[in-house]
Image 1: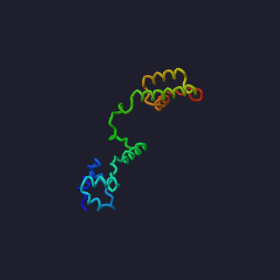
Image 2 (image 1 turned 90 degrees about the horizontal axis):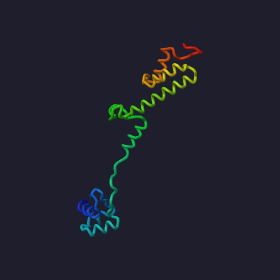
Image 3 (image 1 turned 120 degrees about the vertical axis):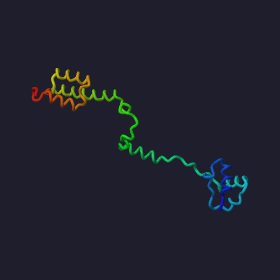
Image 4 (image 1 turned 180 degrees about the horizontal axis):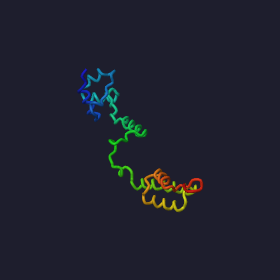
Length: 154
């Protein structure tokens, strides 16, 4: 049964695309006989002809990507758009590193594992950016025998 003309008339009446026109399968004979806009208006009023809901944009893909990102995926080189300094603020990185190193040195001083002179010297080195990390400080202390163990310099 060809209902292209009826679909076109119904679509123009409702101000939608013919793709969105729905015909009641039980009243197809009645719909086929309606060839004027007036006939079609009656069928629309009787709910024999209705609008289908507009197709939206599926959220499935975005939800899936979000779930993957929450698991730490999609962080490879191909996903990165900015350089290292664009992605991580160098100043904030510096502040975090220096705070960690200073906290570590204060801990050593409080536990009396380094004397005041060494503490001051190491603090100046931290300020100057000499140490790369907390581990680098530990290596430096071992290499230069600055850590006090058993009440004396090792």
